[in-house]
Image 1 (cartoon, one colour):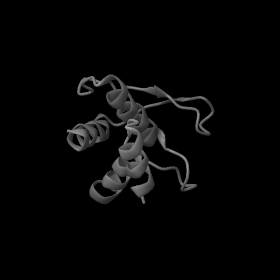
Image 2 (cartoon, helix red, strand yellow):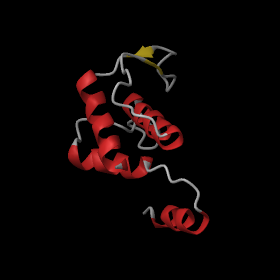
Image 3 (cartoon, one colour):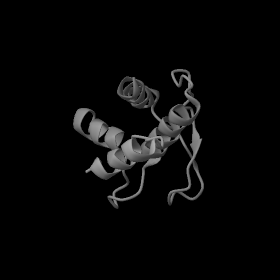
Image 4 (tube, one colour):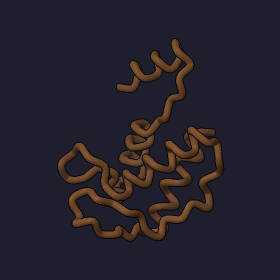
Length: 102
């Protein structure tokens, strides 16, 4: 599924942010972490957290181990509420990103 992205990356040298690979990894290894909303298309709060951390680490090359998941502003149909993320599930997401990008 990601062959075209890898091909463009190899031909152009453009950075590849492996968010899709990480969604698939988490779906297979930790299905209790819902990264996609029930519509099957849009990211859940956990998917948004994964997107943000993965993009951050790929652009800035910084450690995300201490990234806080206490709350994020999330506007995905939740009346502009602040969403509280489970710290254990947020840690699983951080570990998956760190281990995948190594």
